[in-house]
Image (cartoon, rainbow, N blue to C red; front, side, top):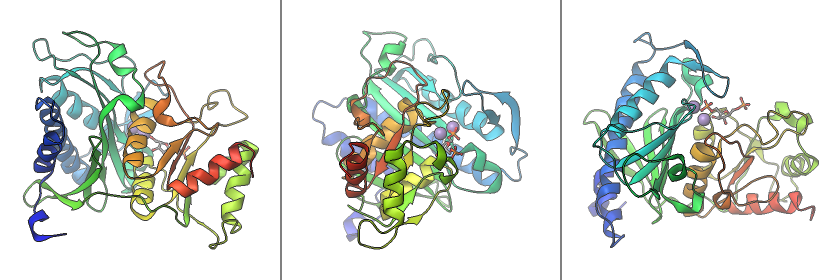
Length: 338
Ligand code: AHG
Ligand code: MN
Ligand code: MN
């Protein structure tokens, strides 16, 4: 990284991004900076979780029927508190809340945000990387409190998307449509500094990420593709399996090192007929990031994730995402061309 690019903070980069959008008003910049503050607060709590009696389950279950971890609740409340009073948001959707979340009266702004406050919840108590995923749209309702329509927009309409991964270090990766940048939190000064400028996902890789426990429930095209990778079908050596069980961590590794992640449909069960991952606040934001970084994101029946018209807040979608060549090859299998 050149000397003049050292010490670039995420706020400076967000400002630089704003300058790339002539019609920008500074609202999105303000929103993203408030999201950064939420990320810093959650990061501090995640790093103290073992000491602050915040591990374990909250005793609640969410709309997904999953046990809600205490840190899920903390992360969810932190983001809601920041967003409801930042003055740039008109409506929110969270994985942890069944319905849309309104903002404080008088603080309505021009953006809608959907988020997974803490992805990888099952990994919270065992010190494995977890993360926050966010997706931001410009509102389409005229004014005042936003509506579900402001949230149910195609992924191609996102104005910004990204994630914060709480791992060996806390890294924020985001895009506003002008490339993908990564920032690492320096906890000693409480600032995110540019550490991964202009991320480009390697065109191909040697890694695949999938939960092999479900192999018997995959459609044949998925199974044939995975076997092809495992048996050196690409001719560059057999692929290795890396599966952390936190989407945000598996995705981040594939973004940096290359790789393909799959969470596909389950041909045996109605409940996971569309897979497990949610479109609005998991698949669509990561699809924007990966496409901006030169990768691809499709479903296991060949649809581009960003083109899918959402019909409900928590709808699930099958996901194949990562290095372009790896996803291109998966597409050949699901089209029956291989
Ligand atoms: P969340 O913790 O937000 O509910 O997301 C968990 C997701 C995702 O992070 C991960 O890829 C997937 O669950 C793992 O599911 P399996 O345990 O079925 O592999
Ligand atoms: Mn999640
Ligand atoms: Mn979650």
